Length: 176
Image (tube, rainbow, N blue to C red):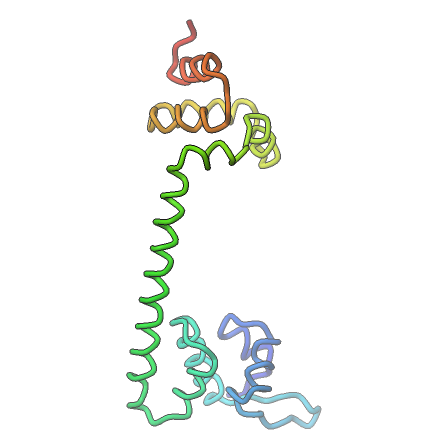
């Protein structure tokens, strides 16, 4: 079986340019050429590209992939273990960022500095395709499933207290 660059790329859900890039940096060997000067890839190239994709999906760098593909079969554990440690450390850094942002959001002064208004919010919702009826359904669902958070959200939009009360009242189903 032989494959063109386009068919090889499609078989791995990649773009043609990605396959050509992998070839240019030596991850894939340069294929033979047909009489018409087209690249002709073999099954071994497809197998290697699938392995590259597997390693990329695992988050390995192209440099790490090259070392794994060029190393004996049993040497993968060291590179994979190192990458697992790197990912774990990155996740922990992201969790620290997440906690820091949560602390910042709980700061009342910061909430006041974040100036999104009712007008901005409704404009965003309208631009996203929400009709007035969609927005009313959204409020009703928010009030039903998380009333305290609904109250907090309305206050965050700097809506006056009497209007917040009115919105929450009709959202709860009371029209009086």
